[in-house]
Length: 208
Image 1 (tube, one colour):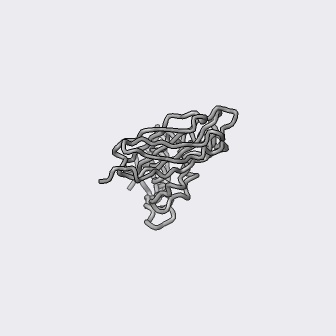
Image 2 (image 1 turned 90 degrees about the vertical axis):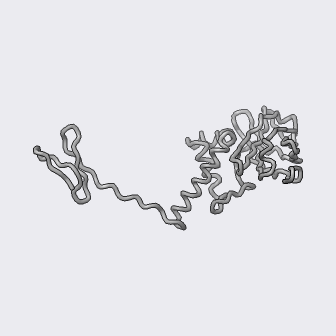
Image 3 (image 1 turned 90 degrees about the horizontal axis):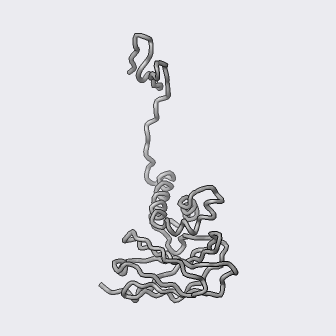
């Protein structure tokens, strides 16, 4: 219901219009439509749910994707977070993430070809990689480790590609949970290699 002042100015709603006064002048706008949440099972609901899951995951992996997608984000004038979601949009089935297909880096640098990933009972990850695939430019290798149950993420210190081996420690509290590792190389100029998914050996973990 609207009211009218002695000056003839209207305040309030009439039909589908809202009248109000700003600095003594009459203003009018349309009535805001009532928000209706998308129904479960709808395409809009599924799209928002997928975006939410990937956005949460990107929050945890942000240090790695800032390296792995930086060049692409600059080219697209976007954020690494958005590029990550776009690239990994098809890696989600409902709320389940396909971790072996997850991409935290992609680029033109040759992949390190990781091998022999081991996890000690003390929580030390060791992995070998091929040191002969480097270019004439400086290259370093990273290992990104994610524990979904603990919502924890660690990015290793960079190791020179000529070394051929990388070592890092993860929290002991992760040892009885699923752990996912992703390795990639970075070259001068922020060019990176594609992600290599590295299944973490489970046999070396302490048993409950």
